[in-house]
Amino acid sequence: MNNQSRSTPKVNSLFLPRRGFLLLLLTVCVMLYILSWMNNLQFQKTANPAFIPQEHQSFCAFRPISSKESLEEEKILKSITWPKTPSITSNYTFENSSNPLCSNFTILPKVGEGGQWYIGDQLEVSIIIKDYYCYPKTSGGDVLLASLKNRDLQAGVSGQVVDHLNGSYTAVFPLVWEGQAEVEVTLVHPSEAVTVLQRLNSEEPDRINYRSIFRSGSVSEKIECNVCLRPSKGPVCDFTDVRTGEPWFCLKPKNTKLNCTHRINHDLGVFELNLQKEEKRLFQDKINMKTPILAVGSSSITVYQRKTGPVMLRSNNVKTAASGFYYKGVWKSLGITEVQQFDTAAIIQCLKGKVVHMYGDSTIRQFFDYLNKALPNTKIINRQNLARCGPFKAEDRKNNILVTYRCHGPPIRFLNVPIQDLCYIANELDSVSGGASTVVLIGVWIHFTSFPLKIYIRRLMSIRSAVRRLLARAPDTIVVIKTGTPQELRTLFDALTMSEWFSLKHDKVLRALFKGMNVHLVDAWEMVLAHQLPHKIHPEPPIIKNMINVLLSYTCPKMHSENNL
Image (cartoon, one colour):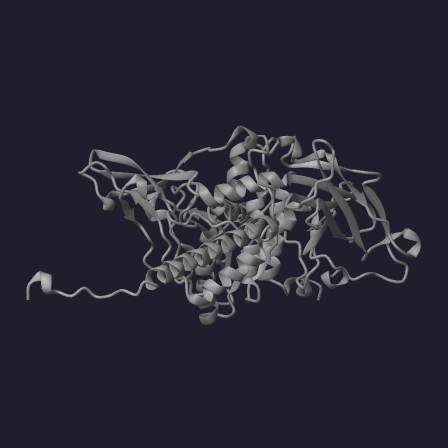
């Protein structure tokens, strides 16, 4: 058949218009759906106070976890979501940010009982945050700390701050001693500064980087390392821990004579600052960072002892969640465990025949240093190791006491640590036999504050799993977890890497993950906040002494009753 004889199929003249109409209708529906989705997303961002920006996780490595742990992680993150804070946009001005000088607090009057305050009552304080025009703020999210103190009595207790999301806050305190009690309220960060801190941990988790030296013979090279390494920087050496799955990477050496096996140490690198001028103004010492807020009217009250009988100072007598308080410089528990006082003789008696393993950062090393000085017969083993990282052993052969310390694995901001001295706490716990004569103290927090919170959560999950394995094979083992502490914030570096806003969230994570386990807590956060001494990452000796008393009270709870027989 030739081409001319081929028949051309007939097309219905109505088909093309109908098809075009259907395609047009489908396109319109898709566009309307997309617009609706975008409007809903924008509404979430502007109207939902619990909106969480997506983390830039593309260049951060996270330890793999189970589906059950993933659900728990999601629940924890949701439970500690910070209130929505103001955006730092082109319309933002510094004068609209929170100003501690214009802000104030007021002690709310006592209702009933003639307006007098008694031990066992709960004190409430109203806090109003204002901007630099002295206008009240209309949103929440400011970082506030509150405490109640009597410096003459060396008494103090922390307060719980409630955010009402409208620029007003309430601080609540238990009244636990007789006499004067003065309220102290501090603006740690304005809410606008929290916006910046959130952005930094989301977009720039690598703002602190680390270094390792790779060496082979006379050839060496200093290489950048991190758990968050941007792919654009080049190929990497994978130093993920085989047993725990904890990730860590270094860039591959450029020198062809070096390879990944030639890494010899871990070191702190540099801090990369990426802030706008207006953002920097939000972190000014004595202006809007760790700055006191003053009272309208009196800042103190007088507390009386009820004549109807003594009040048992326990946490169920007050609505606040304080774990304890200071009186005459001594920490007293509001919980179940009574805190005893341990002098040198009592420390020896308590620890005789025991092994104390300490794992964590330099704030845990303070406990090791204290016990080493307090025990007169101890001898340091491995003295040649780095003063910060260890590993250390202090042995008292006369009384059969052994105290050990090891720092945790990276990320850790220690200088020039040999890689053989780095360890992961979970691995170390798996080598502990445990038992009634074994005490384990763990403290991990400050070196994780500049990273996405998931990295910290998963590190603690790994440690928690190892604690469970330890307690399963040796249920009598005494396990104690130490929280983080408030600290000095004097520099921009301090604020952007170790802010108390970071530490507050880490504190909540730690408590949530170990809740319900057969472990004890040294509430270092409250013990520093309630004390009259300045806040420091490494608390002063009087505070450490009280923390040691708490640790030893968990270790030897029967000593007090035995001494009174």
